[in-house]
Image 1 (tube, rainbow, N blue to C red):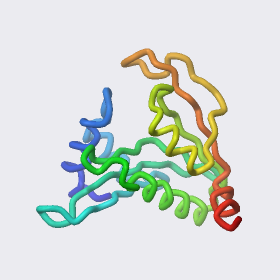
Image 2: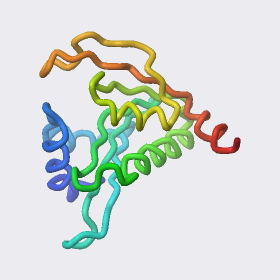
Image 3: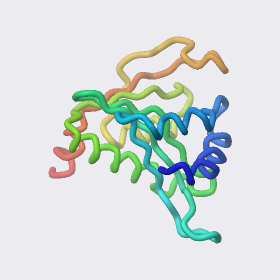
Length: 152
């Protein structure tokens, strides 16, 4: 992700979340050394367009997925899976072994996606999402499992 991507990223962010990150937040994320921001692109009417993005933070042996979204017209086409796979590869190369994330309890499509990558719900954070007073599931994964299972 680059600063030039932010207009498209913000359009996806605002259409994906009740409480969206601000452009300022994305700008700051792009300058922080432990934060990683990836985009997936698709060949569109105006050349290569942003199809989706993922933001994650690596600290020592752990990665935390902070934000992931895909353009509405491109959902259920594997874009998010490609972004998560790229995040796993980068994280493992940087020495991360474990991954965590928060997800709305009601976001069944996202939960199923994360389960594909061996994330499991470990804890609940009651009323985590202040906008809707919804609980968050805290999901956790051993990133090495993705490679162990792929070899089976």
